[in-house]
Image (cartoon, rainbow, N blue to C red; front, side, top):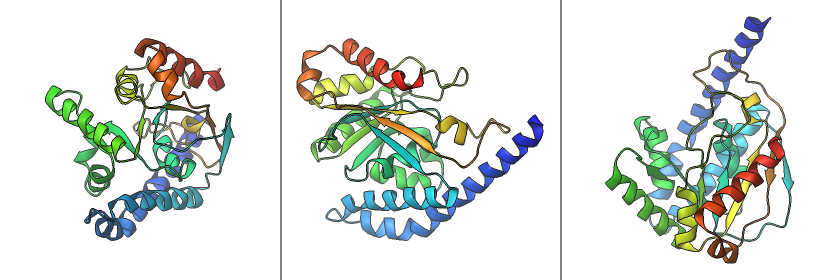
Amino acid sequence: MRYFLGSLSLLWKVYIALVFFFWAIVLFPFFIAIVSFKKTKKYGFNIFIFWSYAFRFFCIYPIRKVLHAPLPEGPYIIVANHTSYLDIFFMYSILPKYPFMFMGKSEILKYPIVRTYFKNMNVPVDRSNKSRSTRAFMGALKAYREGYALAIFPEATFPTENLPHMLPFKAGAFKLAKQLGAPILPLTFTNNYLLFSEPTIWLGPARPGLAVVHIHPVISAEEVNALSETELLERCFSTIEGPLK
């Protein structure tokens, strides 16, 4: 039975990949036209919103948003747990009113087409190279000051066991929030790892279904300035972990 269910999950992962790349190719010329000009580049975010909704529709992923407090206007630093690639795809349709850029691993630049999307509307980070990491940090500062929120997964990678328990957070997101005096918006994805597991785990779970995300109260700029980096890290970890217990 395990191998039978695993085979069905693998087929679902193949289907998801086909849907993802279909829309990546269809939307590509529109995206290039929009981001080629400084005055229209900001509308590239709308491409990602449409892509997110289309992906969810064709892959049967409704979302239930649990809003713990009214959501103020951005920009802010968005921090969330990370157990599935769905976390990335869903975020655009979860927060469509507040343009943001992901700060993510530069390894994604190796992939054709996806590289163009990521490079133009997000901030690639090469943690293995100090000078490139510094440039990424400066790029994030520039994006925030232009009005973009910044989305960061403080775990920096997927946990591989004991899901949905989180890995220890890295300090980068909280260092950035302190430097910018930026509010922090914590999110918790509770079950995305059951809907689409790490692709390299061939027989790992994957299926359509309801995704649940908790949108926690924003930590205000005043609180960010008053707390240390360690206190911010611990507070966000505790907040995000809450719905997972």
